[in-house]
Length: 362
Image (cartoon, one colour):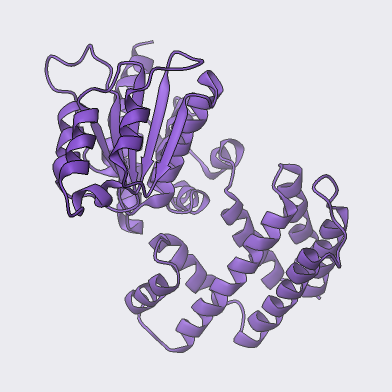
């Protein structure tokens, strides 16, 4: 029992390891629940995952009637009215304000900023306000107000070396152990995202109480992301392992993934592989490849870029272009109605995908 109490204490501190400094409560405020937060940083996958978890938990408990979401909003009156409103059909309200801070900080007039700051000073105890920014926010009036009264979570992009250190530190903080090959496997399964890794480690260390975490434990407890599964599907196509490739596709469908979304992800995947293959052909250094890749997808985490670069080596450019062309034709057939599919019945799209996988593995 003592060990589980220690685990709970340690878990409360792991976010700081993953995402940078988290502003702690000021003395005297520990009994007051914080109700203003800032999620920011370049690790957009992690911050979005965290925000979506909060949103989904709120909807599950309170419904959507007292949820307001603003994006690129510059009208302080609109935001203030939402912040100061009383709950309608539940006990709580959640206000999410996305990518809006710059509109107030860089405004010609300070009037809107002052209105917003004033509202932040009057947040009812029934309301939680979350600012969400897809970049790191430096100190400004809104940042200072959140730091003064709430909590700031910085989501950093970690290099592969930093991810390994983070995993070792987090596992140690949770009084657990993990095998070296399991570290690399978890990074791959989580697609290099520290937020996802942190949550999975909490689950894994609880499951593996008195032994090391292994790859088998990760397979058992960690559900691979769609993107990770698409990488696996691509590997199987490159290796001409038709049966296993079809099994991966069917597993995704049986797990509830939309067939059209799977197709869209595969199309995107091969487009990025073509870019990676082209950059490899230029004999660029890894750092140069990373910088050029960022031009095509500025929000991409460094770890997937490494994977795309490595996996592109399994194909030559002609193969990639041929596969990409076949995927685009299938996508066009689906969108133009040549493949008959409805929201409830996508059997024809599934069959067309399986036929394509068979053809690619010949």
